[in-house]
Length: 402
Image 1 (tube, rainbow, N blue to C red):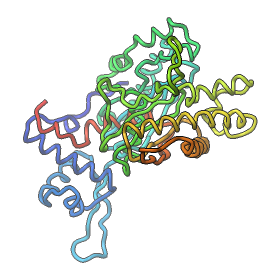
Image 2 (cartoon, rainbow, N blue to C red):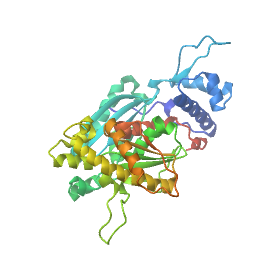
Image 3 (cartoon, helix red, strand yellow):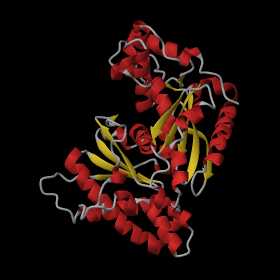
Image 4 (tube, helix red, strand yellow):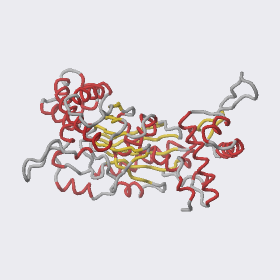
């Protein structure tokens, strides 16, 4: 069952005056989200708002069930301080990651914690199967909220811009590829619910998860790489996603690996060398289960031999990407994450660090490589966090009427 639209207190408010008030409310919520539970005095210090304003805002947020009071902290001079925390049941959102090897649905609460997940694996998404499943699983998550369903604020679909892209690599016919490239996934999901539905490029959604809940807490500018069935990327500048003119900034999958040698013979792209699809093909060629590329079996016999060969090739290609990105962007760091098991990610990062020593860094400052902290949930989690950010994070545009 699809829930009704979010209750009025969760909707944007209209006038300039109320817009200012809502902006301050969002500043307070953001401070608590970043720092954890805080008493009013500390909130005033962090936000530079007056104690009176903080009192009014927190009272309103408590009435809206967005904040909870913790037990008073005693033992200090003066009145006991009462920490305020986000109410996990204050709001919910759903992220849907549609990938080339599976679809994930995540229901996330106001603190960003995953409450429920659903997964549909496949060799490649068949529209006749996937589209009905999108509606069925969405209804399952909505129904699971029961009386809290009015607090569901939105849904975000995270998927490649062209799900049928690189169809020759995946063994698809041109008809299958064309069919997927003509489907508007955001519109398909919007037809299934009254809730607002947004769409994000899969790598961008994964980067949002890292920005909000991972390394983005400590890094302001970084190039983000995610090694999945196909490798992808995104870019953060001054703690803001940089989408580029067509929303495709950081599209590292298409990065050429060497100079073109002759007309009609374009160089290989990064995705050929640094995608888990390549590891799948190696395993399958030796009669091994290709799905092992995504779990701990990849590090064990008899899979480990082919995994090591893939790591060596992928690491050298990722090193090339890191040097290229450093030359153009000079980021604080390059964050690399992936949908493989964590030991394989650590091995890939160590090999990439080693490969970087073979590149000429003259004229450049070496960029550190940092392991991403989210893993295989990154696309769906980032998708789920986007509606929460849209509804509750500070946004100066709120000073203006819609």
